Amino acid sequence: MVIQYLGKQFFKITLGNLTLALNPLSQKSKSGLKPARFGADIALISLKHPDFDGISGVSFGEKEPFIIDGPGEYEVEGVFIKGFLNPVEYDGKKKINTIYTLSLEGMNLCFLGALGEAALPSLTREAIGDVDVLFVPIGGGDVLDPSSAHKFSRSFNPKIVIPMDYEGDKSKELKKFEEEAGDKGAQGVAKLTLRKKDLEGKEGEVVVLKSS
Image 1 (cartoon, rainbow, N blue to C red):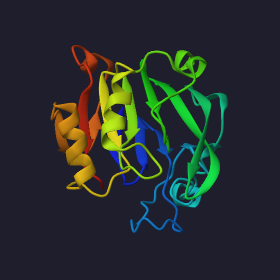
Image 2 (tube, rainbow, N blue to C red):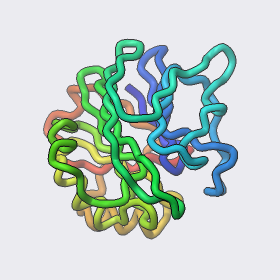
Image 3 (cartoon, rainbow, N blue to C red):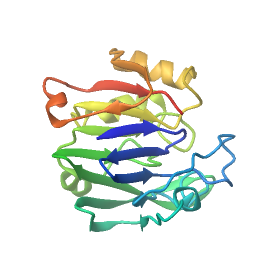
Image 4 (spheres, rainbow, N blue to C red):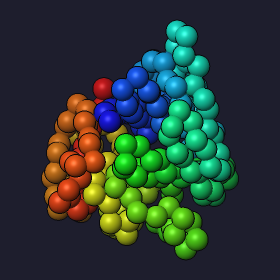
C-alpha cells in the first residue's frame, strides 16, 4: 500500500492496480491549492463541501470512481469500508461529517475527515475498533487544533498517525502538533509505502507526508 498526501485532506492510496481517493479537493475550494487529477476506482467523501468533494478531479480517462459519501457499510473491489455519522459545523453551517474505516491488506485505517470536537459517542468509538493508521486533522478552526488532535489521536492507540488539513509543510500548526507528539517520526516523506509487517513495534509514530 502506498499513501500520498495531496493537500488539505486529499490522499491517494494505491494497492497494485487499485486506486482510492480520500476527500479529493474541488476546483471550487478556496484553499488556494491546485487539485491533483488522476483516475480513482473508489472515492471517499467525508463532507459535502468544495474542500472535500472534488469527484470530477478523480474521474479521469476510463476510470469513474465508485463514490462513498455517507455512513454505512460497503465492500468495493475487495475493500471493506465503514462510515460513521459525525455531526459537525463547517464553514458556518451544520453538516454531516463521515468518519471512515478501511481494511486494506490486513491493516485498519481510520480517516477522521472534518472532525471538529475531540469526542465521539462510545458506540461509535467501539464500532471503529482497533486502528493501525489514523488520519487526523490538525489545522484548527472548523477542525481539531494541534493539541486536541494529538490528545484525541492517542485515545485510539494507533501504530501510525498521519496529520492532515494544515497550511503547508512549514506551518505553525504542524510544528505544534509535532511538539505535542514529542516524536518526530518520519518527516517530509513524499509517500508512505506500508506493509503489515512494517507496523510491528510502532506506537503512535507520527508520519508527516510532504504535500505533492
